[in-house]
Image (cartoon, rainbow, N blue to C red; front, side, top):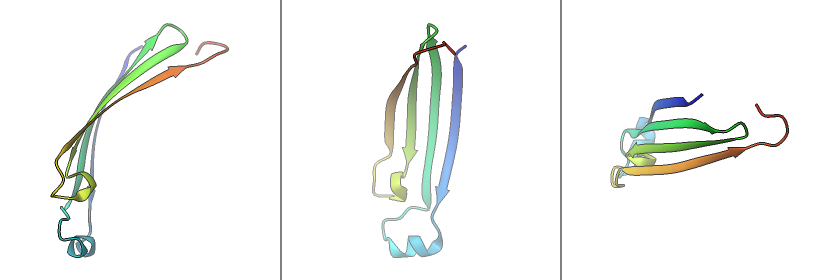
Length: 79
């Protein structure tokens, strides 16, 4: 069966960390969408897309898109 996932994560910097780094944002936010698609009984593919706002909690950094793909294969008895 195809499985879908959606995630939202938010990390915040404390006041001391923001004070020490002049370019520090309040934090970083990530949104992720993924799906795992079986290909037969022994393989699966899982594309993944992430959007990062203030990556590294650096407000001078451009927002970022991360695109990846995971390939799975196994030998022996099929799962």
